[in-house]
Length: 247
Image (tube, rainbow, N blue to C red; front, side, top):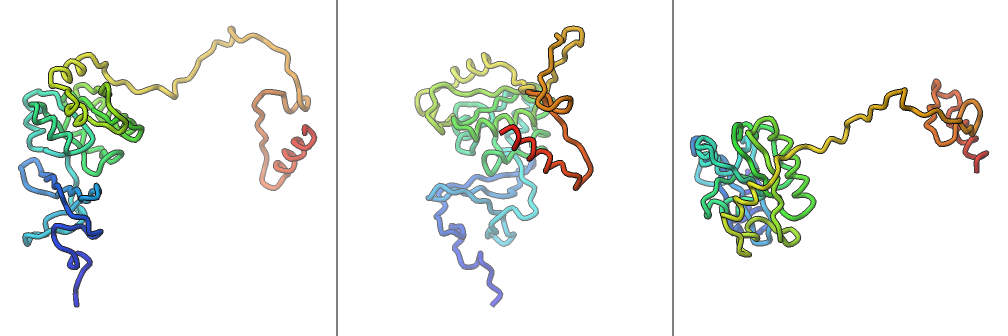
C-alpha cells in the first residue's frame, strides 16, 4: 500500500508510542529550523526533522546537527559574553532565564562533535557537568575539543548537587546568578591531565645493582623479558615450560 512505519503513528508520538511533552528547536545560524529534539512522557528523547509538507520525519537524515540556540549563541559570542555549556536543553533555558548565555549539544553526553567548537572560537566557555561519571567524562571531552579554539575553558562542578543533579536543580535549590558568576571567576582554567609524559632519568643517576636470575643469563627475576622469535619455533611451549618449572 506504500505505507511506511512513520505513517502508522500520529505526529505527536514517536514510534514507541511515548507522548511528546516537550520539543526543542534546533536552528541554523539564520534561524531556519533544522530539526527538533523531542522528550516523551517516559523520559526518552528522539530527533525529528521537517518533511517539507507540514509534518515530521523521525531522525536527522542528512541534516548536519548544530548547537542548541545557535543564532542566540552567535550573538552572545559576538558581544563577548561568557557561554555556559550544560548537558541538556532544559538547563539552557534555566540559565537564559537568569540572563546568561548558554548552549548544549543534541543527543546528550558523549555526543559532542568536533565542528561544534568552531562556533565558540574566541568565546569564554564554562562547562557545567551533571553530578555523575558519564557527565564528567563528557565535560572533559568537550573541554579537550574546545581547548585551543575558545578563548578560555573552565569545567565547573557545582557544589551541593545530588547524584545526577544538574544546574537546573542547583538553581531550583536556591542558587542565584551572582553565586554562579562568583564560582566561575574562582574556577581555574581547565588543563588536560598529562598521562603520557615520560620520566627522564640520567644514566649517571642510576644506581648499579646485582641481578638475580631466574634462568641465567636469559630471564632475570623481577624484570621485563622479551621473548622473540619466528612463528612456530616454540615460544609458547618454552613459556609454559618455564611456568611449569617455577610452579
